[in-house]
Amino acid sequence: MRSSRIWTRLLGVEKTVIELVEAEESDPDGDRPEDVLIVVHARPAKGRRQRCGICGRRCAKYDNGEGRRRWRALDLGTLQAVIEADAPRVSCPEHGVTVASVPWARHGAGHTLPFDDQVAWLATHCSKTAITQLMRIAWRTVGAICSRVWAEVEERVDLLAGLRRIGIDEISYKRHHKYLTIVVDHESGRLVWAEAGRDKATLAKFFDLLGEERSARITHVSADAAEWIASVVAERCPGAVRVMDPFHVVQWATDALDAVRREVWNAERGGKGRVTAGSKSLKKARWALWKRPEDLTASQQAQLAFIARAHPVLHRAYLLKEGLRMALKQGEDTAQALWDWVLWARRCRLEPFVKLQRSIVKHWGAIIAAADHRLSNGLVESMNTKIRLITRMAFGFKDPEALIALAMLSLGGHRPHLPGRHTA
Image (tube, rainbow, N blue to C red):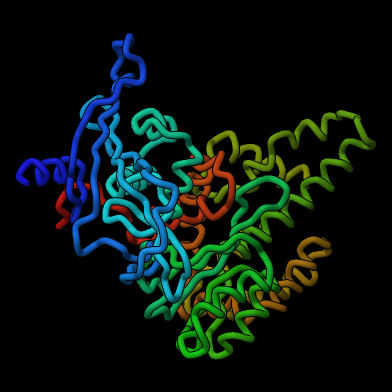
């Protein structure tokens, strides 16, 4: 009995009876560690037998299933280890005939609980290569494990409880227009929901999960100007204040400035494919035009001064972009400063900025709300940056669910713990 307890501690399992431990050699003539496998023959403790693998309720035995099977356990030193046990099936009144649960592994898994937990922890801290080499598994197996571990977190934690101020955005995770829609809690700074897709139906799934009562408690929603977000928010939580982040407005202005820069550059070229002295003077000018004045280098300041003398139309577009950026920083006076900018843009005779002022007027309420309520989408943009890094590491996962699980484990506030370590 004492030996059994020692082995359960070594394997990190509970409520398990160890019957026999033996070494199995896959290659009798080999002398490498991977040629030896530690096989631990086990069975569930009496109170854990004949339970449904899905709901855990005690059920009648159905049959012996497919016989004995093995679960990969954490390595013992340099040697691989597995737990071998019977895998009978039970008849559950709710879930029908299913494989009986075992106390050392999740239902449907081929690895023990500590093995899954360690892989999930490594996935939130280490590189792809480090995980696959250390744990001796394929990268797609890491994705499947992350999905299992996160599914267990979702069962025991209500991630949407207490939401009041949220941010909504989309992020590309793969080529050919593959997107994730994400929702972030402004209060906790956590990622609370993610789903593959970028349309009304996708976002509606979040509010369906949230429910009418909790949707009515949402007070603020920050997002960009996407119509599919605005329409769903207006329908599902009409009482919420919709906030449009100033970052996106300045980004619009930068795009308008770039459109003017290309027009001036093409005009200087005098025809497609030609290179002139005027077009050369605008080479790399966008870096000087994009940056804030306080961040310009000496050479960029000189280039900007040249543009002011040689290309007054482009310089006027630059001043409009900077004027808009400053107007959005006026605090309580933002509304008046922004309206003055709109009047300036209407008579600037630069079509990209004339279109821009129309967009600003269209989304006036959401833009002004950002200043009034001191709420921005900066947290969501920061979350997007972190998800992009995770996306690069998760390259090779066969479906977006594994990527979402890894993102939620990393950014959802419920990171897995290393097995055998006590957390404070």
